[in-house]
Length: 399
Image 1 (tube, rainbow, N blue to C red):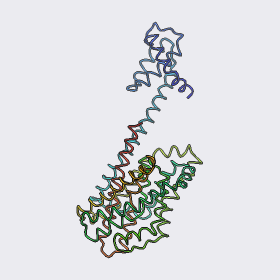
Image 2 (cartoon, one colour):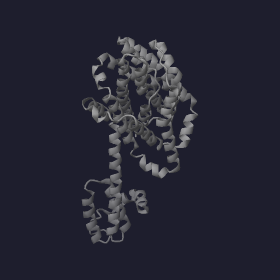
Image 3 (tube, rainbow, N blue to C red):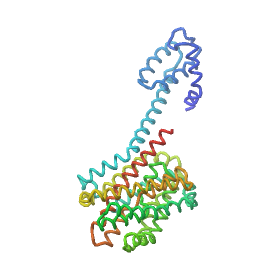
Image 4 (cartoon, rainbow, N blue to C red):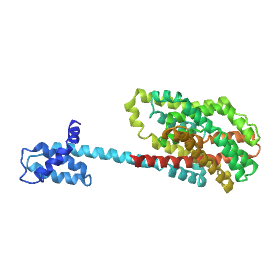
């Protein structure tokens, strides 16, 4: 490792040696210039990675005849170069798989429509485990200090929750009227618009390189506020009072979101080297979980989704797209940074559709009232994943 650091720090001298001494394969090269030739060899390997083993063999053959470079040195140089290239290729593949997030979500949902039994088993305990383990993986990228800092960001959290319970209910009411939806569908759209932020928003924030601790705090606070706001807003915009089980909602949020993140942050603070290795694969795992979760929701509501009209799909696309857009713009206009605006956009645009399904099933006689929530889960995941992919690509271009 010492040799590698010396080589990297002397790359300019290696180039200088080549320009002043000519080709090192030449028989006229002085035998005493061993150090210079070593630097040139490693420099040439780094600059021309294609067919590196063949180049190394040729160069080393000439240099060894002159006593310039030892076999062990050449082999060590090749091992260092190959290991760096392997790590780079591996991380590049993982990054590419993560950037294709929307593709995997759409593909999984399409398969679920054709073969529902492939994903219908992913419910109950498997679903809770998948989401909790994903949140644990996100926690491994955080520290306890970052989590504590998010707790103190009252302005950012309050802004996100306020937009959650103003922008989305208003949009839900507006799109249901604009598309003249039947009453069952209209009530379902308003109901899902009045729900708090969902767990998937935290995962998408992670993949979009937004502010994960802030996203978790927003989800937790908006979920606590849903005990009052969801019934009240549903009554105002849909004319129906929908009671919410406060204890069950808070426990689900703590179990799936808050506790895993805290455990992961504690582990990262205590064992940073170990968690650094694990965190390399957590984005891909998060992508896999979101795709499977979306597909599982679709698989259990295939008939409802297929029978729904184009107006319902269009209204839900308008609802969530408007939430993403207004969440971002209002956050930026009110002093939020780019990361905060991304987080707020995702938190506002992605609802707890599962809660909407449960409430619609429990409190409305017409089963079609649950259809908007089922379709909403797929639509906001696809839109959110696409947005996360665009932001990742933007960050990659900026370097």
